[in-house]
Image 1 (cartoon, rainbow, N blue to C red):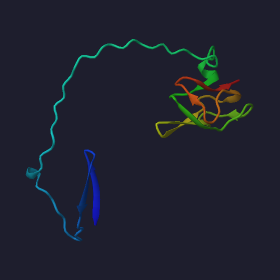
Image 2: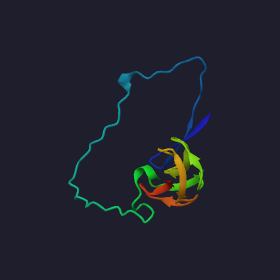
Image 3: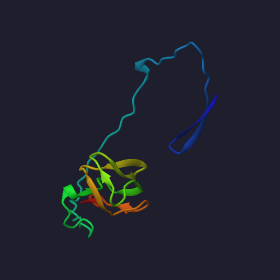
Image 4: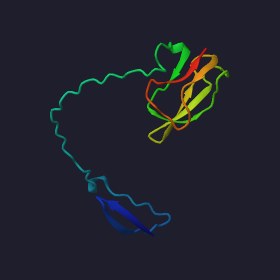
Length: 132
């Protein structure tokens, strides 16, 4: 069997023979782990960047709104205005860095307003759903 390996942007073709019933071990003394040296350097301090709340998040108490825990893209919204939800019911699904994050209700109530739609980018802390 042939395998193609890429190491430091160079491709190598390797022939590999699989031997049934035999176990090949390399003595620990024959292996030498690679070593590296880390050097630190001073880094200039970075000023804090204020995060402004958008108009949708102004004045909403935490028990009246479900907010995005991360920045991402809304994959789907599964609730609509007037729908009654219980604690831990699915509200929406976000995608960030190719991972899905399920946004669930932290309170029981009725959906008053849905602030996002599928395909929309959201910021961390942005209101997803408002409850009555």
